[in-house]
Length: 473
Image (cartoon, rainbow, N blue to C red; front, side, top):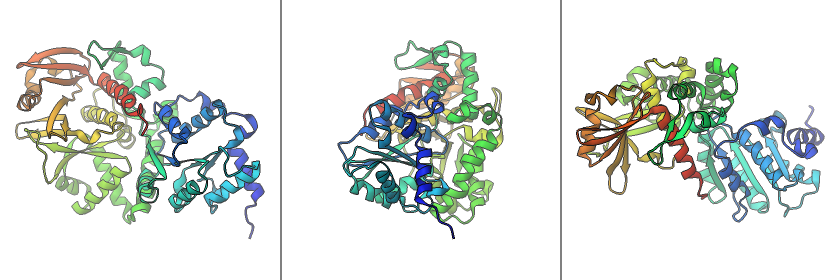
């Protein structure tokens, strides 16, 4: 039986690392816009004072590999020699069966590298190697002068294994889907559509009609960088997003990690959740509509949340008290584009626009370390979409009512619930999102700031990311 020779492997390594010959990355990657996360991740890669590997994880197709190429570009521009950087994609069949150390040894022998060399070694899609966390930890311990970087799409598996076996040796870095602010930057429309608001910390728009068009595009395909630049993917998102992103997680990643035997059951549950994103659900109703038992649903929801596909948001009552048994809750897709891939794109008047607008706003919060502070309030006579609960005082600090309509600006009856909740919890200023109107009004002695949903989604993304990424832990 024929075996793969070291010459073939080294030829492939040269193919995967074109900068060894050309001195730079391919132009297509140079031209690709950088994620807002890049500078923060690049600082982590260059950090040499502690001996840790950087593990870049996140859902499929959010731009991890492209960010790795931008990292290589940054290293080259910073004076690192091209032959000091190794990139290996472990999903390449030629590398199957090779240990990480064997690959490192081949790299060392190719260029005569020593143990104390200033090397950067990147393993892309590392989840394809069984027991990767043990191999990577061993390399980090054996070669403290080298900087190891790993990426992977099986985010739930990576996170679990990283915490179990990489304690003290790995630094996890999560890359979520695009924020709306990133999306506008990618299509170069920020300056055209966005302007600072008179309200400090907020942003408004120069053209709400055009901003709403782009917001709807964002709902349909804008969470995925590659889809932003491909008309083919935009017009066939079901084939691209569903098969390449959702199905691979549901049918391969999660079953292999958690030993799920009935993948169709998991798929049916996720489809039900995706259709009801932004709506309140109960375990009983979810069990009836999906045909999955309640105990199984609880486990599957944990798995889907670990895979960064959904986010559970819990309920508080009229006085902001939490419930000991969370039988009623809301489930949001972490990326609204997943719903369009499953059930078709939405337009301005689509019946799901309200729920998807709420989902998009929550998806901006998925970039915040404080997302677990978010709740929703519901009681017998009303509800509020977003409530920020201070865990120290167990009191509500602020709240937001999300609308894809301008009617609440003139009809205070539609705001009765949020106003009564605010008064009961000592909240003096409210935010209500609209479709097109931006203004400040006073209803029943409560000041309400009205802002278009698209502008508010931009504001969240523009504020949350810089605040999160400035300090590097």
